[in-house]
Length: 530
Image (cartoon, rainbow, N blue to C red; front, side, top):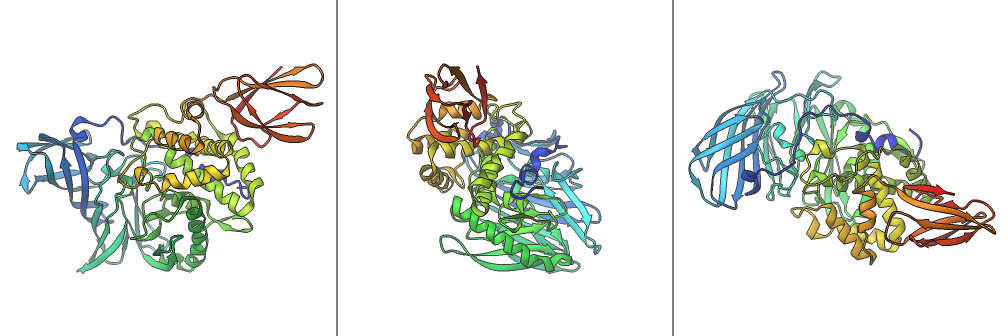
């Protein structure tokens, strides 16, 4: 891994063929379209020896219409013993990863509470984090160590839910996780208490923020908690908590030094850390890593690269960036997955720019441009499931698109717009976003319609076509061929680089040698020279 390039870390998940066979999202089922999930309560006893979970989940919902059918997602590797709706036991069918509840009487519109009592052996991940499931293992000292990855499969991996990105529990989640007493549970939000029984301990984790389903999970291990205070860019005090294996506790302080640098840099470009009422959390995991709201999974084994001459953890930086892009700003359809991964990856490039300068930032994108597959568009339609939407270009090519936007808009407009979007109440927390929201927002800020650019780079696999035609007297005509909007383009003639405005009409430049178009690679382009 080369200094400051970090491509192999940043495009980590893009570089593997995932073994995922289950997925979330897609076309919203009519029975779920009328359902607004408000809160989950998950209470489970976890037995690492038997690799089982047993307990219940309560789902609080608001129904837009009366109904006699309630539909929830849950992988059918488990067993359901009972279902209650508003405290009354109801008939249900459980197959094809769906729980279909048929109420004896019509359920009126309004609030309802559904309790599902279940248990069994949850799906085990084969190659985490490239596929989802439970990870049951031990640390080097012999202590049980378990983790969950669920981004593709979603919450239905182990708890009944409405497993669609368009609906998050607005009032948050309460988790009561019981484990052997020698283990510690790390979860989302705040630890509200630990109750100990004979041989076991129950950890109550609570978040009052809206949260995506794949962040509703827990990890358990022989953890110690290394903490330090942090003051956000807006002056709020929020604790940093690192749930690190006791055997690695000596490495925690240096790791947090690196982490604090990451937090400050992300806040500079994206605004205040989004979850100031809870915590900034990371947890050591037996898999490589994954973004989880207020408790990011970290498994890179404290192996650092150098940026600006100092230790840097590219994986941790990327996953932490999802606190803004993915958790605070959440796509309502997996079709718009690039908003999570692409802008988050662009944030990784901004770290390079911050600590190694503009030339290193440009080199970052010149190198990343060599890795794009460009086989399918970044956005392939609507109502797309996670597995179909996932491809490597939602990372690198989408990040490059933000790089192009910055060039077109200019720093004085682009950077404030980037920060204002991720801090705008219309697109954050419970208000979900899509590609059209991004396009309209940046177009308004730029004072021009950016739709042709989105159509070219987000909705197609085309590149910007630039036609260069030699003429008499050291003259060259340079014109755009496949986009109906004028664009700024740097052109180097006889060793001097100037910025021109190009369109389909074209311009004429004078040069004794072939002009160099876009020498710093701000565009994904195809040169047509004659």
